[in-house]
Image (cartoon, rainbow, N blue to C red; front, side):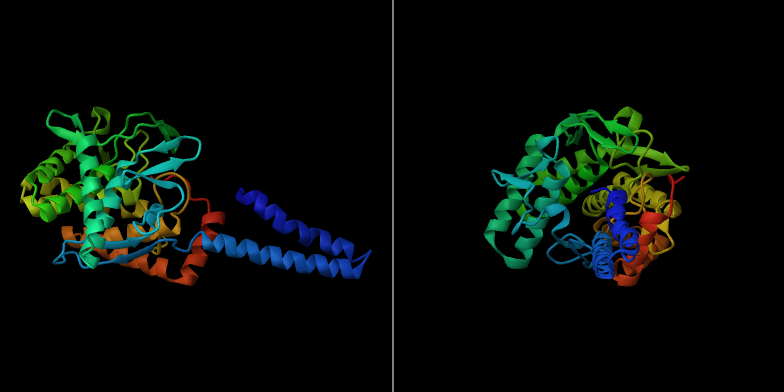
Length: 351
């Protein structure tokens, strides 16, 4: 239910109850009690929107088993042990049921599922997670399509409204490319298959090309920025760009390729140079250029990813801001302040 309608339902008892006092004091008392309960339920509901549903934690950047630098349970409803109802497994690969659209493949979700299975295999030693990881890698290999000659991309085969515009199928995403790279780098290490690393290299190609040329790269205040949703006007979604940078950084580290390292460092510098676009009061984040503040999961995710990218790139201001944002996500009082700000502060588009 829309916020304004929920608010109207909460305010009605407070208006009606005093009027009843002239007729029946007991009815007025009951009305005030109902108003109090409705207000409490409203406040709890609003606050829960800013409480993380997923379990997200920062890991050490480099671990012996090459797990992803962020641990996750429940992000986007993806969990190998208990996936959300909207996630259906088709031959072991997650497909998403989108309201009004139907079941569709989301390449970022497939790659993330693979990363989760890789990490769970490293933690438990169970073969079922290793096999599940291999199935996601096989899907990525089978569904990569050619772009820019030797490049490879994973496309979304459905239209998607974002901000004031709509992405028309097929479209690609810096976030999906970055997560696929992260999965493939781990696949090459775990299974010793050089074709995974070759595919990861090819997946970096769209980061060299501008949005108008079919890539995921744009210019933001004179700096490089990689778009989760490659459309104009740019949406500047923070967590999607950071996911892309993690993948590029991991690929550069494994391959030693200076050109990929430059893609990573220029993108990290672009985010660091434009932090005020996403920062709210030093403790919370905007989701992107349009709309209001990020919800709890996306805010905490951006905070942790910013620390990973800031540490790897040497952009200390990015790492420090990520720590401040994480403190906001962990504090009940700051989450409550974010609830109030999200509903009552008119942010307007980020510039």
